Image 1: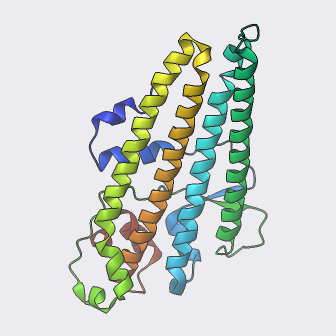
Image 2 (image 1 turned 180 degrees about the vertical axis):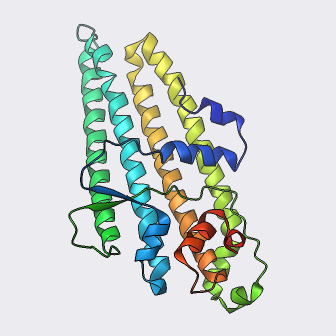
Image 3 (image 1 turned 30 degrees about the horizontal axis):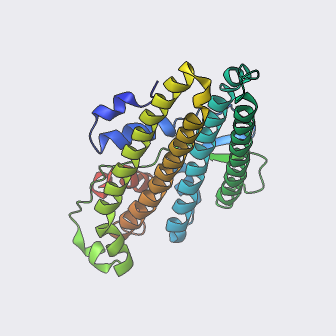
Length: 266
């Protein structure tokens, strides 16, 4: 069954918004040393002169956390393929099928370990901005990124005119980033539908294993590309918001501007 069948009926930006909400919903087991930190609280800890770098670190850590969840899910689903494939042990193609499945299991486990290592590194970078950097508790970014439909209208043009040309170029590129985001979301949903078709074929005949493994690999690759695109989009949004808002904008208002547009912070 397709996980995102209902999302196929939606149009951008609602489609990528709902997909992002599903992918960024935290369902990893709780850890005693993990402390959730929202965007506003994080901005309060970050130096006002280095907010762009701090936000890049925050969204990168958020992406890595979501990536771990995606790979954990893929690993669990591939484990579910083991019993049907084991039933092929007496079939001439059974041993080869079991070897291919084992190779896929090991590959996913390696990817998951790599993702956990990347998440650990991102959290370590995140803790550099913590007032209690030597604390035993590690920050866990909990705010979901902006995922489309970002309003760029801003009435006060004086701050915009004083902003750097780099920031202006990033702002003008936001519509292109949004279009790319919509395309990535559609690719994930299509890959999920294709994976569901291969899952039905596997249920009828476990020898159809290769098609399902390839479909899982494709869906995971498209999902990770979508997560990376979300991070790039939010870094671009941050550049725009920081360009048009006064440097002394409070953490609360900046967090609002990053998620709902600069005009919402006025």
